[in-house]
Structures are given as C-alpha cells and as structure tokens.
Length: 88
Image (cartoon, rainbow, N blue to C red; front, side):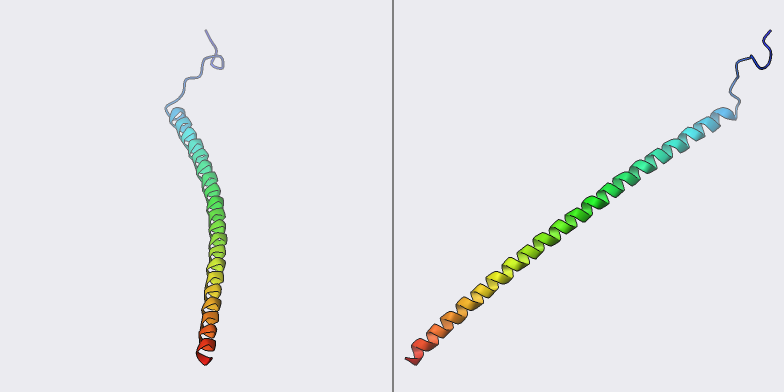
C-alpha cells in the first residue's frame, strides 16, 4: 500500500479552476503587453508621418510663395513697361 505522501496527487475541484484562472490571467497580460507594444509602434509611426507631412507642406508653401513673388514681379515689370510706353 502506498503511503499518503507517495500517492499520486489528484487535482481537487478547486485546483483545476484556479489553474485555468491563472492561465487566463497570464494570457491576458501577454495580450495586454502585445497591444501596448503595437500601440507604441503605431504612435511612433504616426509621429513620423506627421513630421514628414509637415515638412512636405512647408516645402509646398515655400514653392507657392516663390511662384507668387515671381508672378508679382513679372506683373510689376509689365506694368512699368506699359507705363513707360504710354509716357513716350
């Protein structure tokens, strides 16, 4: 006959649900960690895209302002030329 310490341990009615609960909690924390790491990566990606967009818009603004200044100078030169022609 096996002594009590040598007998294979039978899971009690409480131990099995507790093990399942522990496994569920561990899975919850793994999932939470994964979600957090993905969120941090997406935040970095969003910040990078925002910075790139801001730089692109700044370049576009510079080009538009340059074009406007060129058109303004061209129109002014034509007007001055027309004025001189009329004065002659």
